Structures are given as C-alpha cells and as structure tokens.
Image 1 (cartoon, rainbow, N blue to C red):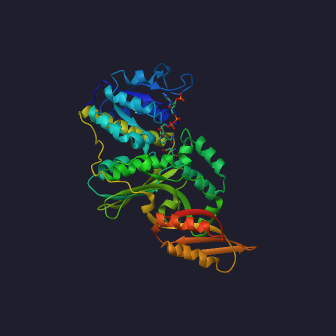
Image 2: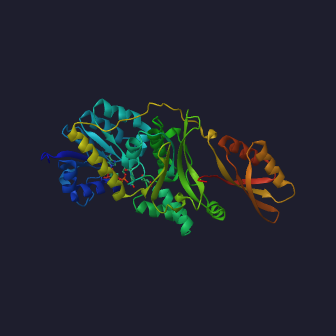
Length: 430
Ligand code: NDP
Ligand code: HSE
C-alpha cells in the first residue's frame, strides 16, 4: 500500500555529490516512491553560495541556513554531503535531536566522531547510514554491517581512494606527470575539496578506520591508522616496480592479529604483482578484498568516486532509511563490543623494496647485507646497477616486522658507503 503523505528530505550540500542526489531524487521519483512505499519530497537544500546556478534545483528550496533547515522538526531524513568536521557534525546531531535520521557520505567526520554520532542516533531512536563514505558506489559498509555480521572478518585490503588510483594509473600507463593527473582527477569530481586529503592518504585512512571498526566490531579512529600518502612515490619507484613485474597502488590494509587480541590499520603505497587482481584496478575504480573465516575471500569492485556513483550509494541509504521509518524500526547501530586495541605499525609484518645509492667498491654489498642480518631482516633478492664508482642497489626482503625494517634503514643511513636511501616501499599481495 502506497502512503500518500511524502517523507520529507533535507539536503545539506549541493556540490559534486549533492547535485547528483537531487537529480536522481527528481528523475526517479516514481520508482523511489514505489520502492519505499511513500513518495520522498526534497524540502530544502542548504548551500554556502546561494546565487550559484544549480540545474534542476528549485531556487525556492535553496537556503544558507542549514541549522534552521535541520531544526524544522518535520524532516524525516537529512542527507549530509557538505563534508569536513564542522558544521557537518553539529548539523547531524541537531538533526537527530529534531527527529530526523541521517544519511552521510562524510568519511572524515565518521572516522573522527563515529562513536558519538552513533550514540546520538541511538539516543534519539534514529538511523545513521553512510554507505557512500567508503569506496563510492561499491556496496561495502552494508555487506560488512549486515551480510557478514554472522562471520568473523580477519582482513580487509584494497584500494579505497579513487583520486590516488587515478593518478598512479595515469603515471604508470601514459607517463603523465603527477600534477597533471591530479588536476584531471579534480576536474572529474573525484578529489576532496582539499586534495591533500587524497594524496597524503587522509581520505583512505578515514575509510580504513571506518572499515576496521565495522569489520572487527571495535572502535578505530583516523589517528589510529598508520598513514603514508603518495607524494613520495617517484617515477623511479614505478619503473622499479615494473622491472619486478609489479605496479604501485595506494593500499588500505586492516588486519586482525594472528592471536586475535588486537588489530592494525594502515594506508601506504605498496608494490603489488601485476598478476594480483588489484593491479588491474584502473582510473578512479576501487576494489576491496574482505577475508572472513567462513566466507573465505570476497572481492568488491566498482567506481570509487565521482558524483553519480556516490549519489547511487546515498540513494540506496535513503531508500533503506525511509523503509525503516515506515516500518517503525531502525537499522543496525554501532557494533564495537570487542574493544580490540589497535597495535602500532612497528608490529606489522610484511615485505619491503628498498632502493639505496651506494659506493661501487669491494665489500659494500657485504656491509649492507650485514646490516640486514643484524636486524633479523632476511633478504630475498638484490639487484645492482653501477656507473662511475656509484651504484644503485635494490633490495627486496622476506617478511619482517616494520620495526625491524625501520631499524635496518636507520643503520644503513649511518654507513659511509651508503650515499642515500632513495626509497622504501612495502610489497604486498603475494
Ligand atoms: P563539494 O565541495 O563538491 O560540495 C560541498 C557542498 O557543500 C557544496 O554545495 C557547498 O556549497 C556546500 N557547503 C559547504 N559548506 C557549507 C556550509 N557551511 N553550509 C551549507 N553548505 C555548505 O563536495 P563533494 O560533493 O565532492 O563531497 C561531499 C561529501 O561527500 C564529502 O564528505 C566527501 O568526502 C564525500 N564524498 C565525495 C565523493 C566524491 O567523489 N566527490 C565520493 C564519496 C564521498 P556551495 O555549492 O554553495 O559551495
Ligand atoms: N576523494 C575521494 C576519492 C572521493 O578520490 O576516493 C571518494 O570517497
């Protein structure tokens, strides 16, 4: 039975994502009504610049007073696509206080204040949904929160930032420069308002924190995630990866420790073999592997950024939240009962690719190998190319703790024969 009284929706933000949300709400209004069981009506659109021309948006709905909009008291669902911490945080809590459920795409806020926002939603008996916050259009949050709720997830690994994948793909495949590729990603609507969030790994770290929290039923904040961006990745690293039959990707990796008593979460560039499925993830696509005890390995793949893909995830949440509302229920809240601590990066065990500039004379290789041995880091392969008394040495190690590798590099830097450590990159996915 279709209810005739519409559910009222307030849209906070009408940029890359918000404008697409509004467009789909309008063009698919009849289908959405049929799927929900009631029409949904956009009753207000909060923005910063009211005079901007916004195709398809009734100017009468546009306001700069987002607070008044969420305080109306008759709003069923607030969609927050402003981004950043404030005013988004206050607007979302005010929305709960005034009876609305919330759909948000704001990973930065959820990774910083997720626990408090979930608590506010629960206190007011409302929903907080955020599928769009992680990996754009890819259904990942709901599968982890609901479909895998009966299993034990041990690992989540993948590419969760479209902008950086786009940049690395362009640098690798067409030899484009870093700035040129970033400009293109920004023009296509993939990058954050401040693209530093993408290239320095903050955006991926926020997503890793959200994924780790849901996957391991614990609380992980963005500050708990070890983060390295791609600004240090050089054309030489990419060329070296190619020589090894690898490519470079910015990965997010969340793992439960073997003893089950802690978790780790990290974001950093890594070399992965060309035969690994993540190596073929191109442009702004994302892909995430989830390893669960009973399910085994699952792969989620799709567009990770951009207006229409992200709006698809927002609309999916809108339908779910509206259905809950009509059914007089709410969806799953926060599940953080395991309270597992997050271990430091030093405890992570993986492989490394280290590129050194050294003097090309007898005994240097032995000196370098001794430093690795003294730190209990076992060498897998060594490649040397030399010219005019200087050489470039590329060492790939077997698996070793990150702390042992850091100690090795510190000691290598002190050797007279080591002119410099050109790059250190982890090797994953083997
Ligand atoms: P944009 O910068 O394109 O849009 C932001 C919108 O918020 C604009 O309409 C802006 O108004 C409005 N706004 C900014 N400050 C205020 C304020 N104080 N009060 C009211 N409105 C305000 O961002 P995106 O659409 O790209 O991103 C929105 C959110 O979605 C972010 O959390 C982002 O991380 C997330 N997201 C983005 C994806 C993408 O591919 N772009 C993918 C997944 C998630 P005005 O138009 O007047 O400037
Ligand atoms: N800036 C983000 C990215 C948007 O490039 O992945 C999607 O979350």
